[in-house]
Image (tube, rainbow, N blue to C red; front, top):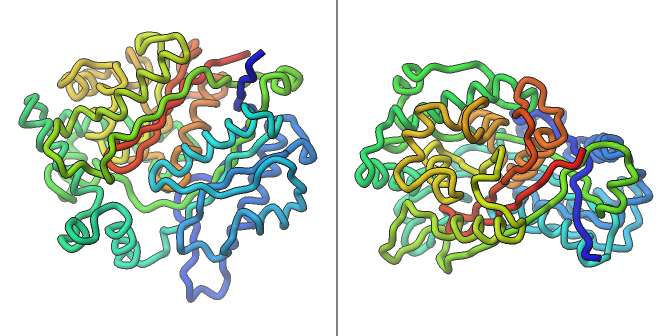
Amino acid sequence: MTRRVALVGTSAIPVGRHQTRSDAPLQVMEQEIMTRLVVDAVADAGVEKKDIQSLVFTVPRPYTLQKYFHTFLVSHLRLACTGTVMEVMGNGMTAALAFDQACNEILLGRANVALALGINMEAATPSVEHAMSSMRTTGDIDFQASAGFIPISWYAMDAMRYMHDWGATREQFGAVAVKNRHHASLNPLAQYRTPITLDEVMAQRPIVEPLGLYDVPGRSDGAACLVLASEDVARTLGRPYAIVRGRGFCHDGSHQINEIPNDMTELVAAKQACATAYGEAGISAADIDVAEFYAPCTIVEVLVSEAAGFFARGQGAPGAAEGQTRLGGRIPISTSGGLTSRGHPAYVTSLYNMIEMHDQLCGRAGERQVKNARLGLTTGELGNYNAALMHVLEAVR
């Protein structure tokens, strides 16, 4: 019988500011945070330390104090592993790839229990240093970087194009920010939990037109650990879990953004990756009960909601403004608060997305709980969705 992978346990610190300045007399040590999270996640799953055979880490930010973090932490935990211990990197898709590779460890029979984990420290790093690193990472150093091009710039261009093509308004984007903040107000892991109004969103200073302060994510630190197991192991644990039903990936062949003229708001890679994941799961978009998106800006959530098949082209923004993506709506999206309010520690963001999906499908999301949630979609992004990695999960209770 084909092996299947279950998400059986999670642990995370609240998204926020945890990194200490380099000149601070006492330093926050990443390994101390991660050690506690591993212990908590293993306890949450109901497995034992000796059961862990593989660990797949997100590559740490360059500002992380401890280098070769993956092998250092394994030593710190005194874990002897017979599967694989490694770090993965894929810019914004890094955490989604860590989850994906941990799944592979189980699917290939290398492990019955595997961890996907990581830490993202950046909030105390000077903005200039972080921006320079971002520009060299996300663009062509011969073209975009020399012009000061950053990810928010390309998302803003998407928003302008979408407004031009479909008649969308800033208020419709703002409704996404208001919705996400409401969801975040119910989430103890969220960075920004004070509710906001549409008037407050519209009154904020512009970051890159037409996106304002509440349309974009802040700087965030975060750390999370997921415990994955074979379905055979999951069945023995005596508690609810989420099974991975489908997986889809697509890279459109461009670097971060496409320099070749194209339909910049269609998100072809996301559309194809979702279709693949739905096909593998044997479902359609209409079967999804809840979705947790990698969407750094309000416009991105709108575009992914269309690429995932929840709305027709041009209908994602008005649909959000109508409340269709809120808790209690037709298709709740970003019930954690999303990247604009839960927070966006980029290299571990998708781990937080998986934690929210696990909580929803296992019926433990509290006030954020989507009633009778059975099937969920999580998305991962590289660049401006020039590549996408999607997973469909199903509740087993």
